[in-house]
Every structure is written in C-alpha cells, then in structure tokens.
Length: 176
Image (cartoon, rainbow, N blue to C red):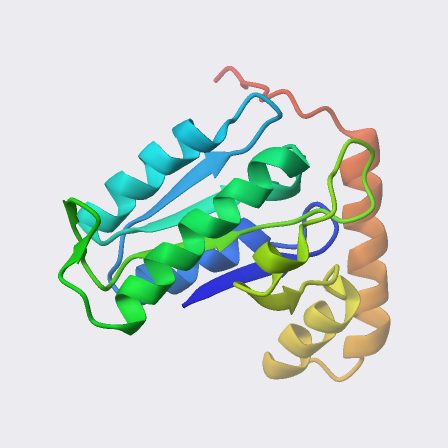
C-alpha cells in the first residue's frame, strides 16, 4: 500500500515511483520535503490525495523533523486502515482506494532524521543502488551483435565519464 525506496542520490527512487504509477495509469505528484513542513501541511496534502485517488511521492521524506514525522505516522496509518477496511470515507472526506503514499529516503546525509519505528513499519522498504553502467552498456552492445562488447563498454564508459567531467553543462548553439 505504500513504498519507501531508499538509497544514494541519483539512483532513480523518485523516477521509479513515477514510472510505476504511469504504468498503472495513475497520476503521481512529487513533493519535495523540507524542515518547514508541519503535520497540518502534510495532512492537507493527504486530504487531496485521498479525495482524488492519486499517488503522492514525498521526496527526501527524512528531511522532515522527527516530531512532525511522529504525527504523520498516525495520519498515514489512518488512511491505510481506511483503505484496508474498504471504507468509502476517511473522516469527513471521500476516500478513493487507489491513493498511494510513497516516500523516498537518502540515508546517511547530514540533516536527515531517522524515521520513527511506527512510521517505518507502514512503508515497504526498497533499497536502490547506483546502476552498473558498464554492465548495462556491455549488455546493450552484445544485444546489437558486438563481439568485443566488454572492452567496448569499458571504453564507452571512460569516454562518457570524461565528457561528463570535462564538458560544460551549458547548452551551446551552433551557427549555420
């Protein structure tokens, strides 16, 4: 009913959640969490999600203070219980059972809170790792019929790594 992908930055936690929703035909709204979020603002977001039946992906959820997360745990549990019991209403608002609450976590970073146990228990954990680009490249080259795919993959990764490090991120325009 809820998921918690965690891992280093750039591993595709948010993108995976959005892709899963897209493949099921469900709209996914991404909320960037910060220390300024309180239980009322998060509660209002939950109200909107439950009424529309869409998914909410709360990015870097562990940036929210522990005191707020403790109250949020009660809110999430109430929504999950209402869905589990097939209720049509949650408190005074209509409840669409397709609602989903997902959180992404970046563990080990400065300023990140550890989730309270009562909140952690409400989300299915999923560990994300940095992809092995060399292996992915090798597989793609083998699929295209290259015989020296391993050596070529190593060279491609070296080339792209150098390009990423040395070339400017600024878009340059060429004149005719």
